[in-house]
Image 1: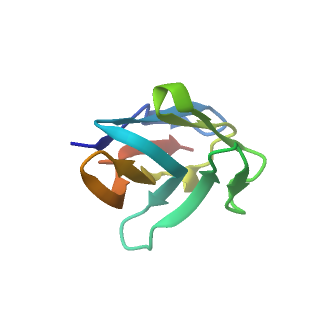
Image 2: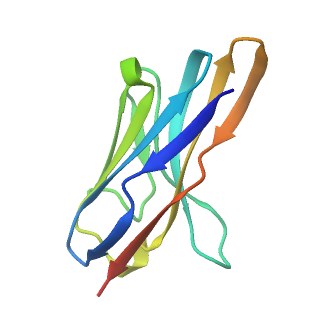
Length: 120
């Protein structure tokens, strides 16, 4: 059974940093582009960053220059380094990717979410 597990969330003061990680586990054949989303209650889920298999990246306008997405393909893990955090970055952060698993059709998977709280 394939699953995504996020870690690294927590409480930090404005201007601080956090590093999120999301590890995919299970009978994985291949993993496609990996994404980080975030969601605040009452608002739509927002795409924060995406990284392709070859390492190409793209970011939401609100995090450009502050956040960095990276991946370790050998560990099936994607990271999100968040610097210069602002109170408006407070949200639950989710990772997402499409995985081709053994005996399971290609489908998208979501992690359980990790909460990030930035105090002013």
